[in-house]
Image 1 (tube, rainbow, N blue to C red):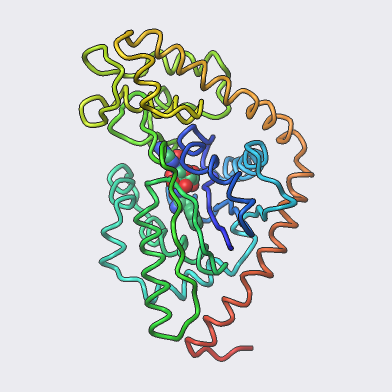
Image 2 (image 1 turned 60 degrees about the horizontal axis):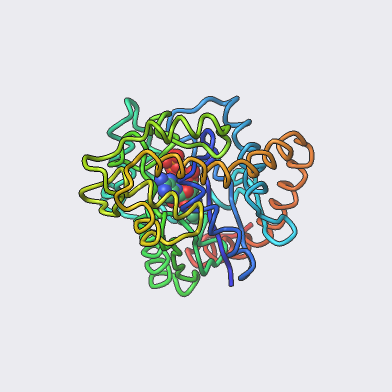
Length: 327
Ligand code: ATP
Ligand code: LTN
């Protein structure tokens, strides 16, 4: 079984990324041949600083190892090291429809909040489809926000297969049963996000314990004092319940029963401690791994070599079937 997922090297990664994605990556790498891609080409579609992009790409590599990815089992690589990705994206853009791309909610949401909307933000999901399809991927572990993009990748695979002949596997998404969409602590109607969330509402994986405690303490809660999971009526408390469930592994009903009408104070402070217990060891491992930049680069170079070799035959088939004269 082939597994593929991509993560953007934009800023520091947050608990939402952990909950929706990283947490699934570790067990899934035992189920088959896994590829984890640091999608630097995607992260230039919104405003960015060149120096930060360089740093963040290495930060993310260190983070992926810190959460438990094993470079001897899985292939971890940087997207721009494998030129097949943008090449395949160009080919796929000829079968992607303008209308469908315009309906992508991430494009609409992010577009609304930018002064300058790049063409790359619009074609972003085509590059994501190329990432996935080049590897003949069976399963894509992702958070709930990427469902629509995965659907587009499936549509493109089917359209290409029917127009030019069987070329791609049609991939399936894998979403976590809880914690697939963690919300901002300050604005529980919006997903937790580094690129367009509130710093106070975003728990970073590398936040020191005191910062985590402060952020959780100031999390927006709802009226009343019952600790109940009711995402419509109580988005703030429901989000904290989900966070605690992910951090401790305890099911939500069990947490509801424990805190019931005990008020928000004790509950919040326990959520903060659960997060600290989970994230502190990851932060320490991260700092250690990040300090050895030459080792990180060496592992990424090995990953890129493996990725190039794996993606090449699919790209070649795409060119052949589409009628290009090959050199
Ligand atoms: P950001 O919103 O910070 O820009 P992103 O979703 O745009 O993050 P990535 O960092 O590439 O981009 O996301 C990596 C993985 O994390 C994806 O699988 C995505 O679905 C998941 N993810 C991102 N935000 C959340 C969230 N709030 N809750 C659960 N999963 C999330
Ligand atoms: N769009 C995704 C990142 C991403 C991805 C991928 C995820 C790029 N390529 C391939 C899974 C498979 C995001 O914003 N989280």
